[in-house]
Image (cartoon, rainbow, N blue to C red; front, top):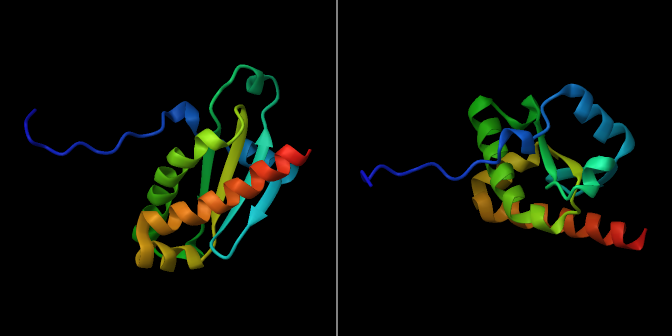
Length: 133
């Protein structure tokens, strides 16, 4: 190649939630699990889940987390962490991850490893609950 570093692989656009109605449905009808840094909402999409579609991700990071640079860093880390955690989620689910203000300190202190750990904890709790019924 030409020696230019390539950006990490991105989730395809169809693998993301983009409309406010999609976010709203997940918030209102989905299940939530939270910790000090993040809140994870999950909601089955219905018929699409039967097709084995991968979970779709929505990320919400408010201004309480920090300025645009901090918010974008937290979003990028969450997307990367979700890429690793998503195979453990059931197919056909919509997922929204909300970053709490403490997520900025976690991103600064531990980076991707810390974000990955906290998201993995929530995914494990969500899948355990789903297995129970």
